[in-house]
Length: 181
Image (cartoon, rainbow, N blue to C red; front, side, top):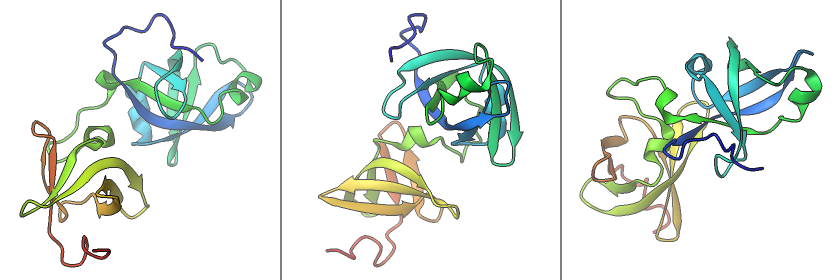
């Protein structure tokens, strides 16, 4: 796969979901969103590609409608079930500028990946490698010092996020970080 030659160089793509399977016979796709299903109403175009980087084909979104925790999407140029089946399992990316605005206390996952994580008091744990959805609450996956820490992405644990400094300060919960010391 290669990036569509029409993509501007300044576009910053963000993963927003994964194609699950075709829906019906007219080319509709069932997508499992990483955010809210309604978010897809803000995306005039998406790129379908692989997990590691936004490389693939850019599609115009003709229609998007929520279905429970998924979203059903019609893409321009995907006219039947056969074409839709070829897209199963692809990651869905969109330009960051299309993401809905957030409240002051909200964040997008991609904004946290790569930030340093420091326990109140100064001990550095490592960097956020990923976030994980668990059903109950999301977890920060932090790698550092040959260890992996799973920290709930909740206000009680994440005391401060300083995007300028690139640091997340987390609460020093007794026993949480020293289980393997």
